[in-house]
Image (cartoon, rainbow, N blue to C red):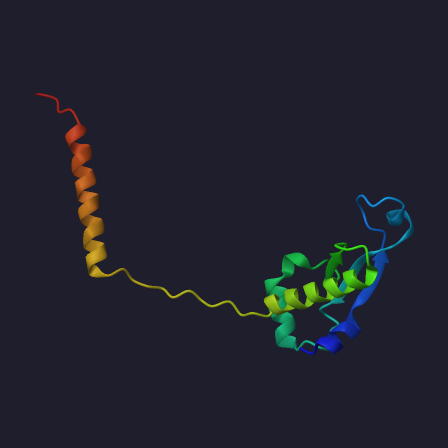
Length: 134
């Protein structure tokens, strides 16, 4: 995955940031919204796209776009850089193939201990029971 090619495919929009900040917030659009269309990407291979769809399906909208926002700082340029880094990290995490867990069988000793503990518990319950005389 080439980061420079990826940046060319991104769509940036600047929006007014929310929260406190006085008059500066009312004048300046410092919040950055980054959109990355996974379907139309030429940077990613078909296998990588399928892996992304599988791993980050809940983060994609109906148009299969990944949307990242950043309003951490008052500077639009810094927010843009932070948003790009967030997006690149998100894509890298989405491209990691999860390892399949090993299925392990408990050893004979562990199984024997479990059965002994179970029998001991059953005996304890049996001793609490009141027997009726016939």
